[in-house]
Image 1: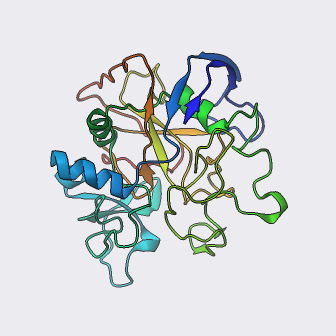
Image 2: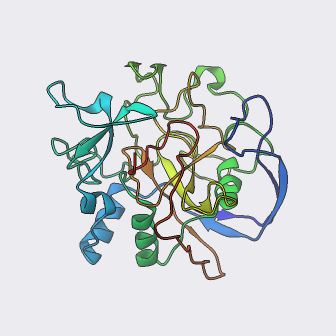
Length: 292
């Protein structure tokens, strides 16, 4: 979808801003026109990339990825938990084809967002598709859908007139998800109403990679991710807000992390990753890291 150029107000510094996340201050950002995919890359689109390139994802190379404990079968032998978020479990055989582990498949989920993709996988896909990942500023500009300083892509109220507008946790986290919005896990990439620019699910469903570091002053490879996911809930993580952010390391992957692509007339700026640096965990518990 075309995103017009102009000057945009990004960031947030009200009472909802999370300490340590770097949402503020509110600042004016100039942006050239660009294009953003209407939705996150789906399993079907990612499968076409894999079929043509035979790319092996980072999760497949490691042999495991992080899965939300509520999706594991009752007889699953519990493995290592993420230190800051014990509801994330290291699951052997979890990857983009097996979102909940080797017992799961993509049947019926061709139009759901691909998950368990590290940023290295996302960059490889973009190279194949002649696209690129968005910068963090571009992501927020597009996610806002033309609204200025609103909390959500559609305005200020989470459920206007009682209507569910995105795929986030319903109930009591992490024990009880009522799925009142229609989904326990991911939803189709074009579910719910689009924002003013025609983009779907810029709040909830899956976190999306960007090309910027979470904290550029630190000098490590903790990359910013945006949008929140189906696990976000106001009681512990309301990062489904358009200004909210967190980060993860390039080799990390989870069952709620995907990406969408961008394009502009200018050639993309290469993402230079720092090799073998010690990376501190991002604040919060949304993005468990493979080094955990």
